[in-house]
Length: 175
Image 1: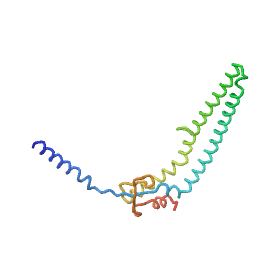
Image 2: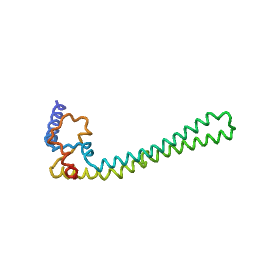
Image 3: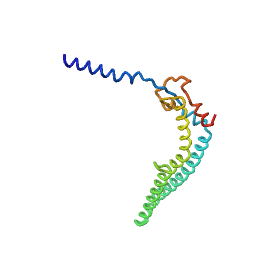
């Protein structure tokens, strides 16, 4: 009986504490980041620059990869005719080329590679402008939450009046 009274008291107090939190309403707006980015010319230009740089670096890596394949193929073909010293020399060449290739890949496309640095330098200013515009609109219209509907797979339906993507584009001067 005592346990039951304590449980009822806890539930009653918990309800009193949680009810204001549950009853509180949030003002929510949505954006479609993909739509916004597609409509910003600077973003498209930056992406094109990244693609060109990426292709140039990938071509350099592909050339080094082909050179390595030729070295390996030649070594396999000529291996039986080579002296132990020549074998060692060729194996060292192959290892050196493999190391060079790995270093090249890391330098350009590794976690802290040139591609990521270039991407950061080109796209971060654009993203910062977008986020500043979103914050301004959210502040002006007193939105508590702004979500990206293109990144929310659980979103099934959204009223069009909650989408502020065009307002963001207007604030950025892109529309």
